[in-house]
Length: 448
Image (cartoon, rainbow, N blue to C red; front, side, top):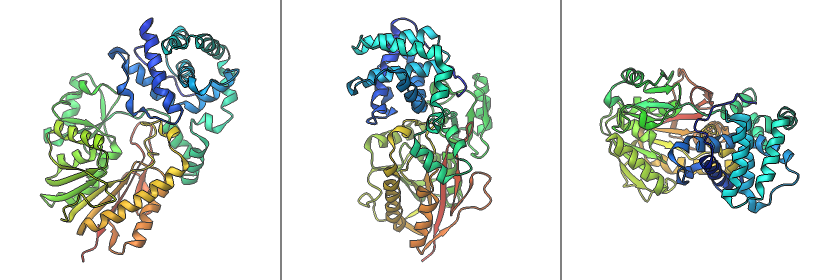
C-alpha cells in the first residue's frame, strides 16, 4: 500500500458530513464513467473544507481499482445503480482509512453519517458495518485483492496491457508515478526577473522550492500551496506549469529568437500555458486557436493576468475556416491525446478512457498534422507535442507523417539532456518528483 498521505482540514460534526456528501456527489458520475473531475469547483463546499474535498475526490480516483475491489469484498450484495452516491461514500470511507491521516471515528462515523445528507439514511448502517470490518481485517483484505495486478497497481487491465506493450522495461514505474500526486511546478515570467530572483522571493515568503533540471524558467515547490500565496501571482510574475510542458518554448526558441515579429500559430492552445510562455520569451505575432469556447476563455484570462496579447480564434484545427491565408513561420501543435502522461494530475482518465479512444485520437492527430502542415511557410518549424506516453500517438504518428510528407524533415536536437529517443522525437516518462509524461517532435519544412 502507498505511504499514507496527510489531508488537512478533516472536521467533526456537520462540516465533516457535508464535505463527504459533496465528495460522494462529485465522485458518483466519475465512477459511472459519465463525468470527470473537471467540475469540482462547481460543488458547494465551505472554503476551509475545499482542500479535504479535493484530496478525497482526486485520491479516491487514483486508488479506484483497489477501493472497488475492497468494496466488492465488504458488501454482501452490490448497491443498485440509483445508489451510485452511496457506493461513492463507501469508496471514500475505504480511501480515508487506507490513505489519509484521518481519525478512525471520522473516517467511519462521518462517512456513514453523510448518507443522511444524500437522503439515504438506510445506508448508514451498511456503510458503518463495511468500514468497521475493514478496520478489523484491513491487512488480510488488502492482501487478498492485491493478488490482481490491476488492483495492486491501481490501473485497469487494458491500461496495464497497453503500457507494458509500449514500455516493457518501464511500465511498472509509469504506473507507480501515475499513482502519486504530481508536484507543483512554477514557470517564472522572465519579463519580471529570472528564477533565481524568484527563488529568493519564495524563501522570504516561507516557501521552499528547487530549480527544475531541464526547464530554464521552472521551479518546483517542495510543498504545494494555494496560488494566491505565491508572490506576484496576481501581477503575472509566475504561473503554474509542469516542467515537461515548459520545454515547448525551449525547442521553439532557436526558430523564434532570431525572428522578431515571427508569425506563430498555437493550435489546440487551451488552457494557454505554452501560449503564454512563448509570448513571455519572444516578440511574436501569435494566433491561438482552440475548438472549445470555454477553454479558450481560460486562455484569454491567462493572457490578461500576464499582460500579454495574442489573436484568439475559436476554430477546428482540422479545418481552415479561421485562417486568413498568410503562412506561419512556426506552428505549435499541442495535439489532443489520451493524457496517458498526466494521469497523476487527472486520475479520472483511468476510468473515462476506453481502448478505442487511442485509435480515434491517433486518427485525429494525423488529420491535424495534414491540415496544418500546408499553413507553414517554407523554412518554418512545426513542433508536435502530446502529454502521452503511447507510441501510437507519438513516435509512430510522426514516423507515418514523415513517410507521407516529402518536404518535412526532422530538426529535433540529438544532444538533449532530457527524455529518451523515440523515433523522430523525444519521449519523457512521468517522474515522481519531477516532470509529467510528454512527447515532442520538431520538424522543419524544406524550402520550396
